[in-house]
Length: 117
Image (cartoon, rainbow, N blue to C red; front, side, top):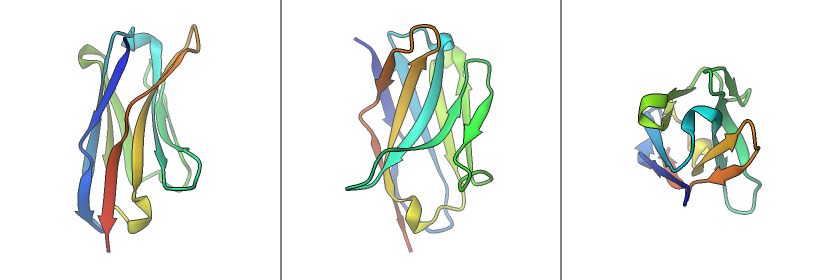
């Protein structure tokens, strides 16, 4: 069974930083585009950042410059470095894997990020 396990969330003050990690198992990691999404209660899940198997990145326009996505194919891990956090960044952050050949999609269970003002 495919597993995406996120970690690194928590409570941080505005202006602080967090690094989220997502470890994938039972997928061909190097064949998957990886992404981070976030969701607040009552709202849709929105893309934060994504990275292709070759390392091309894509960001939500409003987050570019503060957030950085990266991946380590040797560790089956994708990261999201979040700097200068703002209260509006408070959300549950989800890891996503999308196989670029089969387009099969997997989600992690989510990790809560709370930014206090």
